[in-house]
Structures are given as structure tokens and as C-alpha cells.
Picture 1 (cartoon, rainbow, N blue to C red):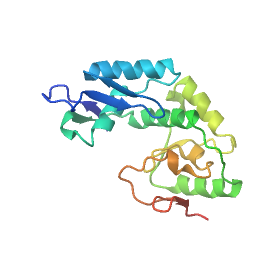
Picture 2: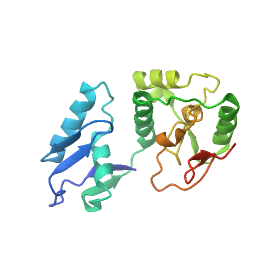
Picture 3: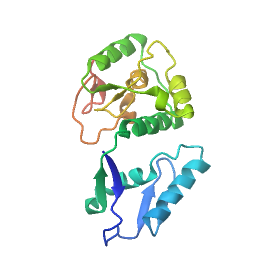
Length: 188
């Protein structure tokens, strides 16, 4: 599901539209279109993929103003989220890598998981595909996929010693090899 702003609704967020850029400033505008344009310009100026700025803004505002947000069907949501995840990890890479044994154990669990879906790397942008290859230094796991539960690419996430910073925990419970409550690897 993708989110978008309901432009036909008569109300607006108090104080206008705003979006806190991760590791950046808070962008503000009087209209949704102006904010989408500001976010797109900010991302381009900082060498980031433009992605889906309206979806990101809608996701931010959905908690406080759900009546201003609409859900729409989109077959490419996983791909867009995968590219955004790749670029997010690229901008703030993890400092510590997991041991080889742990990587193997984690990834074998991911491959058997019902939440694992193959990722079509051919449809990624060239830059995202290049970054994905660079983020997977072991190169022993060419099977890239998308974890529907964690919101990450398992072949990269299993290599990070403490990957919970890169997981999407929104509305998710414990599962797989990572425990949300204790933020620890349960395969150890």
C-alpha cells in the first residue's frame, strides 16, 4: 500500500505542512505540493534518490491526521521501499559486522521465512543496484530479497551486527532471528 495526501479534504495540519528530514532539517510549506517540491529538491541537492516524497510525507502525517491520508494500491511498493532502504543504509553505514557463522545462520532462516520475497534487482536503478552490491561485501549470498516483516533486504541486514536500527518496526511483533523487545539476535 502506498499513501498519498487527500487534497480534496478541507482541513490542513495545524501550522501548515512539514516534514523532518532524517539527519537533516525540518522542511515546512504552506501547501502539500510546495512541500513535495522542497523535499525533492533537498534530496537531489544532497545526492539522494528522490524516491516517493509524497508517500514519505503522508506516512509522517498519518499518525496525527489520518483523515488527510489515503491508501492506494501499488504493485511496486516493495521496490520503492527497497531502494529507500538501500540508500538509508548507504548514508549511515553500520560500523560493526556480524561474524560469518551468524551471517550464515541468519540468512538460512531468512530464506525459509514466509516473509521473504525475492527482489527483482534488474528493476532497481543503476545507483541502487551498485550500492546494494557494495553493501553486500561477502558476495556469498547473491539471493537478494525483501523482508515483508522487517522492511529490509535480508542479504545485507544479516551482515550487520546490530541491525535493528535499520528495521521498520512499525506495528511488527517478534519474529525471525531478531527480537524487538530485547533488540538481540535470538540465534545466539
